[in-house]
Image 1 (tube, rainbow, N blue to C red):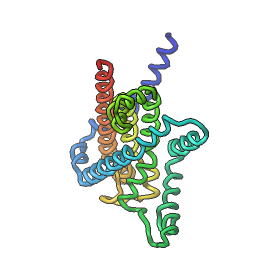
Image 2 (cartoon, one colour; image 1 turned 90 degrees about the horizontal axis):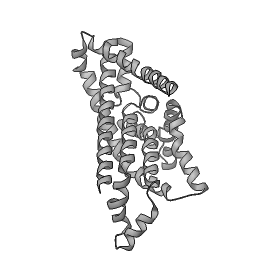
Image 3 (tube, helix red, strand yellow; image 1 turned 180 degrees about the vertical axis):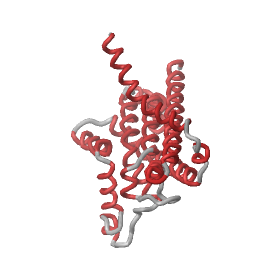
Image 4 (tube, helix red, strand yellow; image 1 turned 135 degrees about the vertical axis):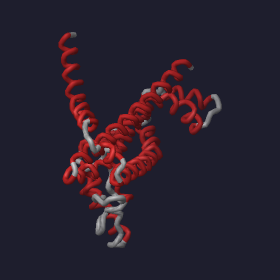
Amino acid sequence: MRVTSWTTIVYIVFIGLPIFALLARALGSQHLINNLFSDLTFQALRLSFITSSISILVIILFATPTAYYLSRRNGKIKRVIEILIDLPIVLPPVVAGVGMLMAFGRNGLLSSLLGNPEYSVSFTTLAVILAQIFVAAPFYTKSASTGFTQIPKELEDISQTLGMTPIKTFFKITLPIASPTILGGLALSWARALSEFGATLMFAGNFIGKTQTMPLAILSAMETDFDSAIALSTILLVASTIILVILTILGQRSQSVEVRE
């Protein structure tokens, strides 16, 4: 037990020390307030939240049915789909950005299929959203699939024998029971979309007010004003923490409601 306690302490210190150092430097900066309310900060923060929110809505819309499908299937096809879904997790973000550029950029695969060599979504705000979806969707899909898998199919069959349609069964029984796990995945996915950097830089570029999200603004600030980079990093840290805490609390409440019922 002592070994596990010490390893836990070392692990927590390793994670907590950079966070503490960042907050300490931010609070000790004389220019923190000015940097927090600068135009650069506002534009990057606004773009990050708008694009990540849209990305999460799209992920929920498409990944939830996919996760449910995977939870009720077995065999080689399921394994192939799961490998494809998990690939963005292990794929270097820069490689993902280059791949998306080859698919959706000018003279890319999609423009060739459409017969329009000038068609391109690269280096636009839409490109930011697509990059965020690509890298963040697997976190939600895996968690949702795990949550759905834990629900016995017999429970759904019983509800349908009692007159509930499959759609109603899903929204009234399956989704509420799996919601704690789904919300956990949603928190990870949203935080990943909010912090996306490599794929966005390669596919969308770094244009202020158009594609410059918070991580890209931090990169730009590091080259000119380190205090601004500290302020932006602190904001992104706080925002990610708030999202994680809120969705975790919602998941715990959903689980407690489930237990009482």
